[in-house]
Image (cartoon, rainbow, N blue to C red; front, side):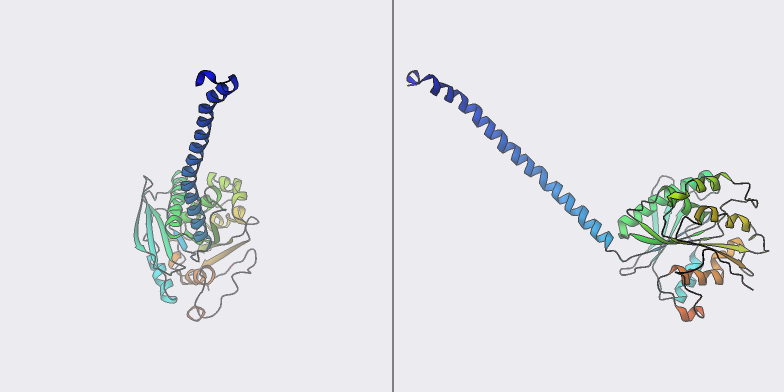
Length: 312
């Protein structure tokens, strides 16, 4: 029978297997495309769902960083005092270790939109080299906290070198598309270390000034100086605290300098100073208890660009 086929028929018969192969190849390709698309769709769906959870999060934790040589327990007395004045906040403490691992104590209660969180470091030593490491470790802690609690904004408080760690973190590590800092308060922070003369700028101050344009523009910032003897708090010169204006002033929405004098204005006592506790409650918390403060200390959303307060 095949011998009676015309040349045209023979050609068609020869082409038929290759055509079948092409069709089979197209079908296989479509099947593979569907197989690949399913996990990609699920992944994209998960990303969108996760982004929606973070976007809709009502949690705005208050995150504390202690100074050098202090541990994650540094703010225990302060937080006990704050909780005695308000309705109570969860208390979570983290320690970031030198191998980038994290250990925790305490926790965040369900439904608490304003927990207190303290981030300490296994290497809590002084010195610029260590402070730079601590800023990176703090960024690791923040990613850990975001992944666990799905918040997209927070409030920051740093005591002493904790304020330097915060500044380096904001300038070098904060992803402003992913996370917003609403307010920052630094307490007794030595922006120019032990230097009293601003003309003698230390390396860390010079570096922070160079990177100041990277600071979030919309934050409200308070810098508190303790003046035990009107010149320093026993450790940090008031001029060094005031040097923070060269970093923050005209870079953020608001920069306010406050001087606190009198009892409990020594460097290590500042977090327990009753006036400073009042400022934290009034300016940093969402719903401060006015009655227990003894009245309103003023509108924290509309202060002057620079102000001072002295305790008689």
